[in-house]
Length: 214
Image (cartoon, rainbow, N blue to C red; front, side):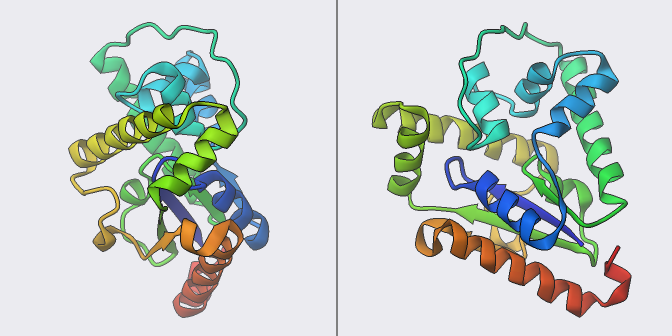
């Protein structure tokens, strides 16, 4: 089975993805994807993460790409890239996702993986949302930023995600028609949301039968 997790910024996407991967015994594809693509293109993982996250500034792009991972000071500067190089990065990201999905038993965080992989019997597509105040609380606590900055970051990063999702894949981020399960993490908590995601994957695997297992 393959689990894809899309999320609003600050909705604990990495925590839920990591917890689900651990509970299911699956590999987690998140931070290592930019490094894989960077190696193929002969560039840096920071550059790949920046391009993949589209319109946000570099620190925000990195936070968008790595979600709630430990915040570190960003000291490198990524030069503006050409549209051709941007497209090459996105094609390589999509290629890497498809290649890693072949083996199954995989959790993919972000990267529009649900759209890249399309409809298949071994795919469970999850969207995580959360109350705006709850997300702001997490961002303030995690990164030591002001509440005003947290709101601005959420709007900017989610706006960039919605834009690239709509322009490249022609669907609206968060539209329930494109997901198998949508969860409010602020209602169920991180552990509760993780448990629901795991239950959904196991139920889908049972329904799909042996052909979906790998």
